[in-house]
Length: 524
Image (cartoon, rainbow, N blue to C red):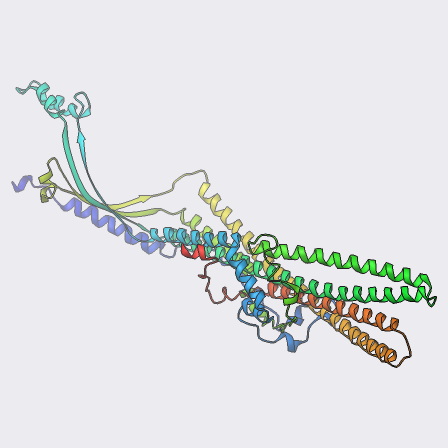
């Protein structure tokens, strides 16, 4: 019996050869394909004034620019000292469908990242089943009987008919496979998936920053328009009083009718300005209501002009120039796209090399239920499988070239986004400084108009003039205050533009992007 026992030496030799081949491949390819590094971040300037275009008078003092910035734009909005502004931003964030979609894209990217990461380890699955089978009497299964049957004594047709009887096959077991990531294909796929998540996270922060800045700009424009309207209404009231006095003087023969007609024309112009400001106020209210997901007119009571607190502009506090690239969501999104392109080069390069998978299978097969658990019913297999690209008309190498070009394109786009960020900050700072100088001039003009009004009232009280010079001075003071309100509103919106250009919403630097955009999304 020993003479007929199968030799195990060939099986052992085959296994040893396979293991040696795998060790050689691992030793040769652990480093994986080389991937071009991403470009480095341009060195930022020491101060904001170093990268300023135009006249030096529009550059803010270094002492103000060097002030440390708040941790987030939410703190910047709170620095305006207006609780209604924070309330509007909260309502808009909760109701914005754009933020909901952006948050859902983040969740989708994370789910995709999980599916890609699952490829990194062994894959194990259980199997089991039962089948009812019948073999063909005229198929390949009967060929062996015909060959060995010859002219033997047994009845071949009876044997074939017996084999063709239906029977049950019971199976149970498990399969396992593991791709040896020798060339980094799976690792680069994980990097690509993480970069996609980072991009969607940055786009979410960009949408949130844009929405909050739009709400702040609209709210500050609304308050400035309301203050201007009240000042113009004061001018109109003073103009009507002047018209009444001029009409009385005309009837008494003390004044020419020309002055009365001129004042009536001026009053008509003031009434038209009030209507225009009311229309502008209504349009801004509707824009805010739309951003907050409300119907037209839903915010009129809450944002009435009588409830407007005095405008308080917080300090500029732009922080350090070196923080700009870290805080801008669009820069983070461009950097994530560059990381995706870099990982794509690694995946394409890894496809040039063999793909090796270790597989194993163990199970039992029996014709009767009671034999499924019997040790003699076992069947198993184990061994490596290799997939080697040989000839594909240059498709894989062309893919590597394409991915390399896409990486260079993403790197150029990233550098362009960074450069645009510096230009936007400088434009915003210059416009802020210009409007601040204009506001200072308007405030000086308002002080002089107040002095003129005080002098006119004193002369009227002393009997040196009638009430007309005082009414003229009141209209001049109201117009000066209207201009101050206009420039204050413009300066406030310029400050919002600076905050948006700086881009720090407090989540990118701290990586705390897990806050849901809305309550509905959080519930998911």
